[in-house]
Image (cartoon, rainbow, N blue to C red; front, side, top):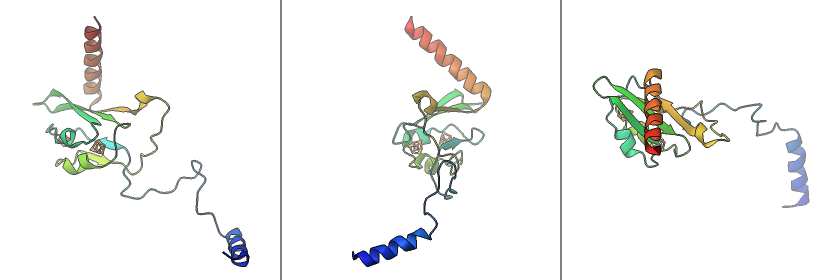
Length: 139
Ligand code: SF4
Ligand code: SF4
């Protein structure tokens, strides 16, 4: 590139607004189809388990507390998820979606990436069972 052309570019760029934003102070709007955090709505889930079967990253697990009463807990590991959206495509009940607004998922601790979805009472029951199982295994 000739020095004259380069100088022209430099001068022009002085009068242009920057292409970048000062993240995280400024955050650009996200596109509608951005694949952020997986969201699960227990009210729509029928417990078929197909999403778990189709997940290529073993990032989700469906805990069945009472199939007849449709009491399920979904365990989701954000750290394993590759945000491929396969589970969303697989689910015929529209119980899953990838958020386009919740995408800032970086964290310092591994356990922050583990997410439990479901009714509050069901999650509590599941976690209590997990703790009891761990204690029994430790004896
Ligand atoms: S988005 Fe892909 S990797 Fe993440 S939970 Fe769904 S199927 Fe698994
Ligand atoms: S595919 Fe949909 S309905 Fe089936 S277990 Fe997964 S979330 Fe529930």
